[in-house]
Image 1 (cartoon, rainbow over the protein chains, first blue to last red):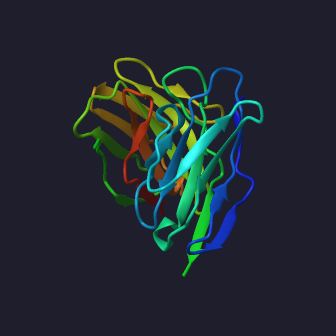
Image 2 (image 1 turned 90 degrees about the horizontal axis):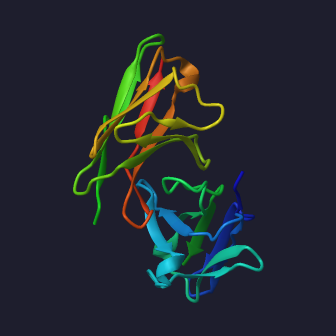
Image 3 (image 1 turned 30 degrees about the vertical axis):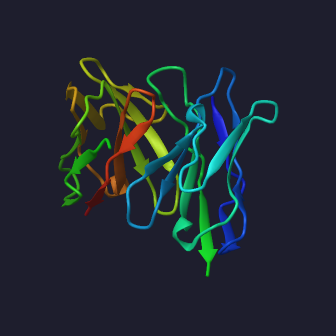
Length: 110
Length: 114
């Protein structure tokens, strides 16, 4: 079974500080990973996917196959970044199924 | 962007009755939709994969006779909680898979069984 670990359930930083949300996965194939974000009282939404290598809202994530990690980073956190973040590697080989990590609640203090 | 809707957004039903939840992709076709369950302050737990025109694939431990899934068209999947009991009270979320395997999520349905 695929596994994903987000070791920090809670993460607090001050505005302007760098932030890194950790994600480690186990997947035997070539992974296609995503980060999803859920702001307060809103639905889950896609933040970024590693295949596009894009930066969304200042966030980037680098896939490290050697360490099987896909950490999410932002150099200068903003208060509006406060949300729940989920790392989602594949949950299987078919139908684009995803396995969601337990999530990290990020709080950015003013 | 892609939009997924769910109906109803919340529902209260009596123990023993059945409840149907609809999931629609509004501006794209989705051959695959997913149904999740989310407990308070916890992550999403995948219940089943809904495939248009074929039977749903259930995750281990999910009762297929309890949670009936029908994917009648490329834009609609339904989840029916049959003979609901208080332990079925939860937040049910659907998503639709798009072309690059990203998932677009519905707003969720809060089910309370009394």
